[in-house]
Length: 436
Ligand code: GLY
Ligand code: MN
Ligand code: MN
Image 1: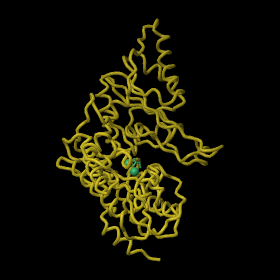
Image 2: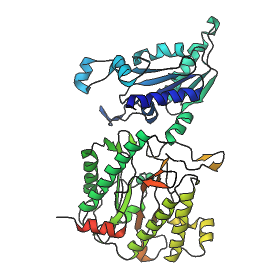
Image 3: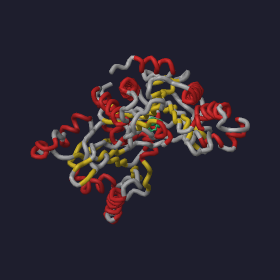
Image 4: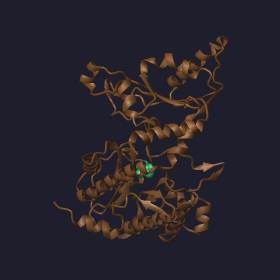
């Protein structure tokens, strides 16, 4: 199946699931970073899922029902602007290149939307993310309402198009899995490179640079999120992104970094010793997290509840916290009272896909949903022991997390990030082979 067919089939499925009505899905706006400098452009994930179209200034309209069709509104060709900003498709080339039924200039959107919404029962859009966009959509509906005396019926329902798309995005198709495998493999290579580049005296941002180099040299367009390169106590700050600390002999380095490849995220964490050798309490903590991750991964299989990997990880971690003397009492009590949250305060994973924290419900009608083949999730237990938390000195400021990306299969799961070493001996061997 060509790429065009993949996107056309997704639009056709959306139209089927809508039954009737019109869906409006805009891509993301360009965003100013400061003065006249922009952030690197990133399309909207829902829009991209349905179009494969990467230019800004575009809106997809899907009409459902007997006269089903998909229409792209996009920027016009503009030879003068293209001298400055590069190629843009323009409606005609976009229509043929991406398989839309119609394509028009985005400048015609306000004129055409009221026509398209006339005599349609429902508008499927996503309100609440952008007030100006919401007002525009309501403006089109009001325009149709103002024409009712001419016999045109205005839409009576506004529905959330994301509700339908979230469910579609949750189960990945073969073509998506191929891309996600590629993203995960590039990220795993970047973590190996980071391990080999690490030594006492280097600075966290130097290691970040190694990761970014490896992402881009393999064609990944961007990091999927800001990399966390956190040594020593910094690893206990869950969203640490300062990345300017000096790597010290005897400390651990936690790296949470994954690339985005062709729109799809990978999300990968490894923790390893700055000097290449796991020792003492750090090794105990690391091996506990590793055991918790193994238990969680064993619980990732079709038919298990979303919560099963988290429960498995919490059980192993809590027992470990008690064994290490960090918590008192029984495992049952420490879980019941949530005492374990002092050292493990986040959940064990999330859906992964076009967004790092991807679309898709975790609960349905009050119950954790069951895992199905084609879902992709992260498995990322950790342990964060801050000094001043009343812990024995030898454990102070140790933070460790291990995160992999798992594709649910009929019998278990396939770890997409498996090329990044995580066993103690594997990491130590790789770091032994450092040069310089
Ligand atoms: N890197 C973001 C996360 O692990 O959820
Ligand atoms: Mn994650
Ligand atoms: Mn992560």
